[in-house]
Image 1 (cartoon, rainbow, N blue to C red):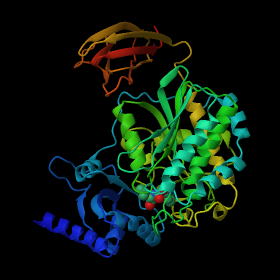
Image 2 (image 1 turned 60 degrees about the vertical axis):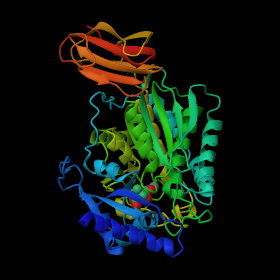
Image 3 (image 1 turned 90 degrees about the vertical axis):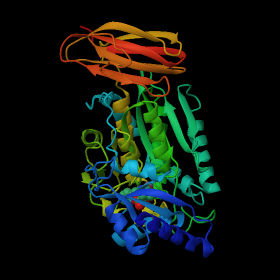
Image 4 (image 1 turned 135 degrees about the vertical axis):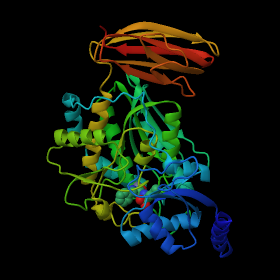
Length: 515
Ligand code: BES
Ligand code: ZN
């Protein structure tokens, strides 16, 4: 009864908008932090929290990993637009939220611990590629970043539903394609989302000998003007977040100019639809998790060109990975020793790093300022290149950081001296084949990975041959791209089982320090 009444109220609020001449107002489900929720409720009293992460309900235990309560709320699209504006205006801070495709998805997200990826071996955070990184960092130029910011902010807007927003995605696709056309190891493609036209853009540099492990650098390609979202509303989004896309583009230019070939795979991603609740990155991070993709590190560059705080680069410590953040701080000290590092938090769902964090991948978010001192013009027609100083000197620091992050991580592969064994074959549905024993040395890690067709699953076990129910590590995503690692403190035999969930071919690579 109570629930029904609430729902009726919300529907009524939505109808009020439609009757007063707004376009048909769809309702959406979001999750958002308590501070933002309190502001929202003051502005729109009819809005209710239908679920709160600190309450235990049937099937769900109260979640303790959020720094404030997180709520599930149903809103009309018009109200959603108001939400960011209200929080920015009242609290002078961003009020992040995540949009979901159903109430069930929202409630699950509220209680879900970030997924733990047991099979994921940490990359080495040792900084040992100075000879490759230092010359590249020195070649990076603010003027190139400035030009990309100008080009992107010349689109009327990059809103996720407009023609201009679609065109901006196509423009980026073509820009990255043209830049990398001479490289057969680079693929540039669009990622299609099911409920809106704007596509994300993904550039992949295939790793030379450790390709199954991926490093992701991201930024969002969409923009928003909270005063309106028509085809003709100006939303230049120069800082938010053309500056992030422009930083990625300068990283790409520099890697290409040096003919850099990573050992791990590198992906540069321009996300669609961040400004409406992380929609693009939510899809992409979930699709990587569904494939069991071994993403060893993620960096988000969202707003890099406005120098509004005394220090240079602020590392956001919430919804990010602390060990990777320490590595990022070390990268700054090593490659840009004159820069000063700050730390802050940006709250629930503030940018696309949160989508990766939620899927269990290590993410970092270096930001232009302390949280409450960011660019005051974002989400308006005044978020222009000129209004952030008319040069890209601040962004250059982030581009250099992103390059050093990607190259330090992606230049690692199987350790020198590791034994690498390759196998291939085909399996029918339900058929399995075992490999080993591999003689793993005390203190070492054995990594098995497959690529192929159909749907192969991978099982790894110490001492005896694994089955599909008995193993130390399994990787059973819905494709044939699988990864599994085991480590051991003593010398041990390790066995690997490849199992055909659906018929197909496999290529299996096993690398380990041998006894
Ligand atoms: N770039 C901002 C996030 C941001 C703004 C971080 C200011 C730190 C300071 C991002 O694009 C954004 O606007 N996020 C929204 C939430 C999003 C889920 C709609 C926000 O923070 O209001
Ligand atoms: Zn942004």
